[in-house]
Length: 289
Image 1 (cartoon, one colour):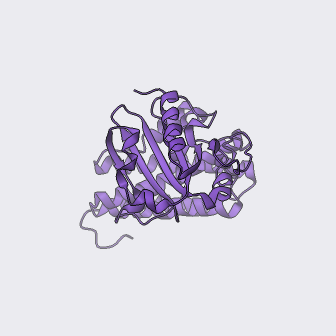
Image 2 (image 1 turned 45 degrees about the vertical axis):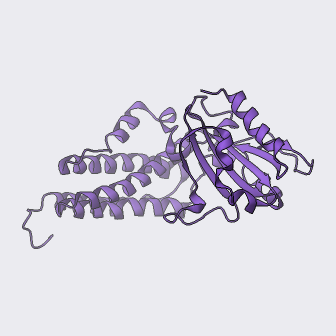
């Protein structure tokens, strides 16, 4: 596996030898001092270039970075609409396990690019026209304190969507129930994030998809959260749903108390009774009540 220095040397060598590349930036996990160092960290690279079309006209130009296991070019895919405006990305996983997520951006966007991510560092500035950057920080990714309205919406979404899980389970529509269980869990994780934010004075990031959440919660909370990922058995899904409702209520009440917000206790109680009612309905029931 090529070392970090070898990879960065290659990224810069390609840029220096190509007159179209005027500057090189990097952000992401390799510029974030708070991220654990391991071999799976991507190289999130941006080439600020002139004459972008000439790159797009020659899709094989990226072969210079090495033999690949697989590559994805999202802006060139029919399944996913482009999301980078005038930019173009090459997501490359190489035979040695390294990965480069390379974005081409028009040099005219240099100011916009420089300030859109606090983790950006400059690796190369051929023309000496790039803005001066502050040291990289992940502050923009820190857990944000919710407003009272946002807290209320999270609670409402949790309890509302939980009724879809119950409906899907009664109908034996397992995939439908699973999809909605995932939405319910997302609201639970959001609430746990806010508790972590309160405990840490909203001064850290828990990472994409909550990947660092385990560091900041109790073992009990973590074990309960893991139990919300059930097998395909309907009874296991019911069990996971009720673990979620108990954990959500525990955490949400604490968040509400700390932030002086109102938790919808009466509404939650009514929904819990409804869930239990649906769980106990016979398969041939013609009415819910």
